[in-house]
Structure formats: C-alpha cells, structure tokens
Image 1 (cartoon, rainbow, N blue to C red):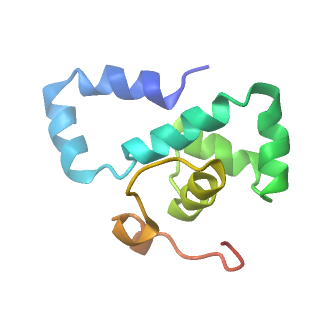
Image 2 (cartoon, rainbow, N blue to C red; image 1 turned 90 degrees about the horizontal axis):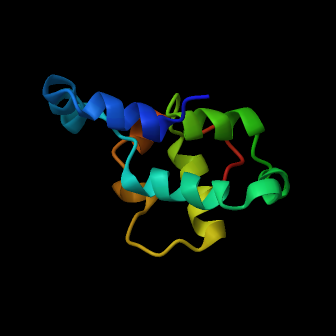
Length: 104
C-alpha cells in the first residue's frame, strides 16, 4: 500500500509538480505530524479513533492524503498534545471544508 509520504516524496522530485504543490497544497507538516503520531499508536489507533468518534475511513483519507479535514486534524492535534503553533484559525484549508456540525 502506498502512503501519502511516499507519494509526496516521489511527486516533489518533479520541479514542475513541486511548484504547483508549493502554491496549492494545504496538507501541511502539522497534518503529517498528526498522522505520524496516530500511526505510532500501532494497535491502539483503532481505540484512539473510536474514543474520539472519528470514522476510520476519514482517518485513512487523511493518512493517504486523499482528503485533509482540518477539523479532524485539530481534534487529533489537541488530543495528542502535539506542541506547536498550529491552529484551525491559521489553516488555509479550514474555510474550504464545511463544518459537519458537532465537531470539537
């Protein structure tokens, strides 16, 4: 199975793609940190997602780079206690993704 990290590294080797990516992509380092921290849970990932009422497919979409939901990133970021200055307020993608309601 290919993971977003592998695909990203391969694609970024192409200077033309990298130019577009730098202008357009909103899958940021914070998202990658969150995914990495979740994957480090190993078998505990299923329980983590269930405890936060996160759909496993939504996490797979985030992991694979298919769909970055900033509210999902925020929920995991806060729960995992990742250190940094990221917030939903400074995420350029947050305004592009409709709030499904009930997310915190």
